[in-house]
Length: 294
Image 1: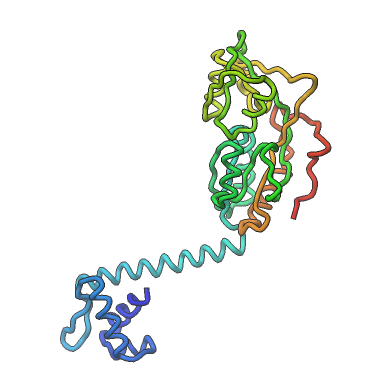
Image 2 (image 1 turned 120 degrees about the vertical axis):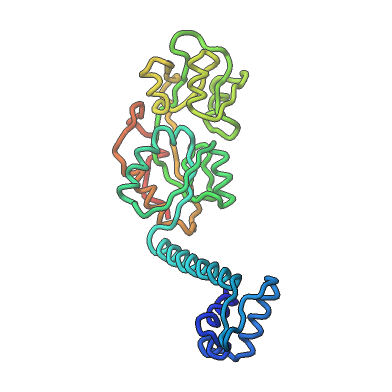
């Protein structure tokens, strides 16, 4: 970029001497810079015409790129400075069930309350998302409580009842229809139903479709399957001896550069009074939401 500044000064002044004055350096420095730039590019960038230094066609092309580079550099600097002062960009990872049920309402509130926040979203299993948080490729993850990690700051967002999901019109095959390895609900299935053949899918729609077709059964939060249950595509059954409550928690690195954005999003999620059909009003004392951890 400094080389382009030298080229621009020569083009604007038409003189090595005057360019040196503008740049605050000696003439030999300007001449040396130009020669090295031309040698590196293998092209002649300026020529002397009637006693004036004039850019060649390729020199004009170089100046055009230089101008765009400087403009982009200033734009990036201004954007990064403003983002640091307000809400830094945020990379969020969420479970598939949370993305389907909880995320739409939260995103709508964020659009209204946090319009300047630049957000990147991706879904995955709890295990995958926590691994990405550890690698630093995500800033905030919304995962099942079973994936809690003491090395991260955390808070409970929602509690819901875990139910067995079965075909609406008949008996299910013995298979367990589950998300891929790393899903906490998959591990709960194994704990409740024991060893059984596994039918692994990557989306909530796929799991519900297979259960509806009688290919197996699964365990999911009641809110995640309420729409399909209401349509008569699947049936749900409470686990015995009593309701099994599962928590969705937020995890983030305590000293994340995106801390301001994380706190804003978590506060919005916890402040929401909208309850999705199928949620339980009770809560487990050990998971009762408290103040935001520092």
